[in-house]
Image 1 (cartoon, helix red, strand yellow):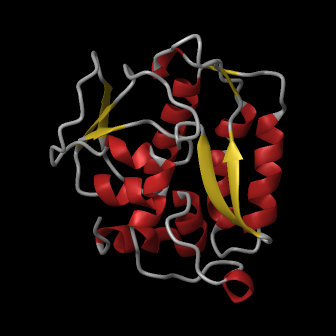
Image 2 (cartoon, helix red, strand yellow):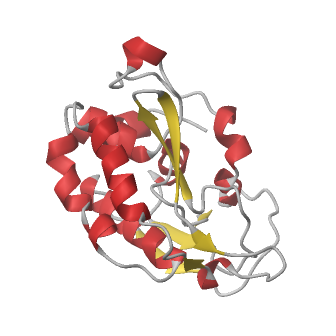
Length: 202
């Protein structure tokens, strides 16, 4: 299947790939702002919170996804880690998984692609999924093929899916929030996250 590499992908991405054995990551497309390429949505005490990785990119200077650099002007890693801790430290499985995810917050990444691939590697390991990956070698125009899920990178598609509800940390305060980062499912459902993903459809 064909996917964009994204920062801590949302649940829809993993529903799409749960039955796949191989993922081809699209890296030859022109980078676009305001997508999940550098963004992840989590459930904070104040409701949905979008965390963005700062990138060095301008619309005038077209860049392929594989060439986009992470900006070093903002200490985004410590800020994101604090946000994750504040949002999920009371969840049932936060302490169980957070140490395995620490390389994301302790490693200096030059390229956004390297960060996103590391996210995918650590998440599939935590979920105990065996999926081989490779990078695209050229760009192909989307043709609505059954294996092409690149449209999931579009934030406007986020509300197109309605997945089964599960207990979230702040459900009583703000209600259920659909299709957040896979981390929300992992921290709240733990090993049962796989069964949940297998029971959902796009």
